[in-house]
Length: 232
Image (cartoon, one colour):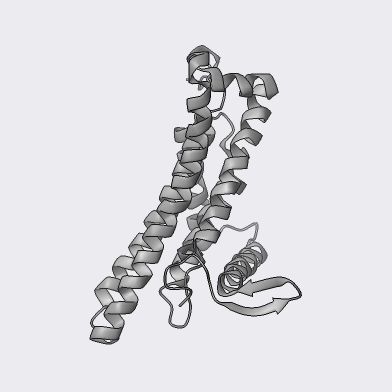
């Protein structure tokens, strides 16, 4: 387990003035799992479709449909690398909290804050790319210039909420699971562990969807007449 309150994780090593905490170790392990998993999946891909590739293709198509539905973007593939990476990193990190001897890096506020900052900077990146600098800055004045300070505060507040929501859910889940194991032993909390696994999946999904909502809010809204029509 990491730090019991999830704010200051124990230091396991020092590289000069840099402290390496358990959160850093678990985050690196999370990243390593994703890199190795991606390499194995890429290596296994062949021109001849296999059942595994069919399932993976269906998952990717579902994610693209979700991106298009939330953002309204004509090219959902542009957002796939960011959203898929965030979702998978959070999901693997959340599941690590269920495994004996490990802890979820997402149960540490520093990790969730870093993830929220990624979204915070991704919003202007995609907004400027879609609307230009002037068009992106203009959205702070919508629907009227009076809303400028409120729109700025809203961006900061939602970033904080994004970090605290994930941290609170995962930290409390780990704490409850640990207490139940200490009191009831390893077999009794099996339903709780299953619930924790469900929470891990749901929290990864919520974080990804909220990220899409924030990005979609700054994209240019095109009239329906400009949307490409399907051929009859």
